[in-house]
Image (cartoon, rainbow, N blue to C red; front, top):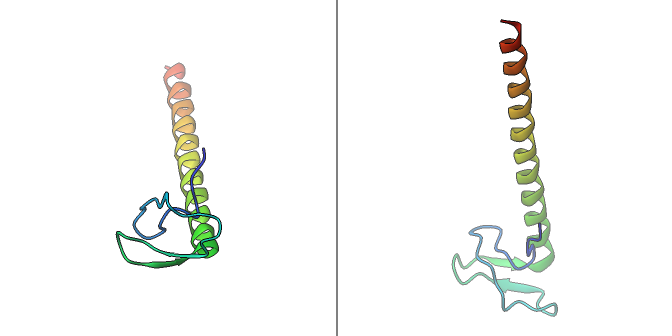
Length: 76
């Protein structure tokens, strides 16, 4: 899944489609926070990775729970 990490405000989530590669800093028009392009991207990449990990953990726990329920129902 592609996420525009440098173009997305890490505070409010606004996506700045006007941002170009030459723009090293930008101010979010929504929350007025000023971002260094690279630091903002790094923060967003970390957030995206943690969110994906959380989804993966939830999916894994659901599978384990389902397997436990199947095992317990097959015993009766």
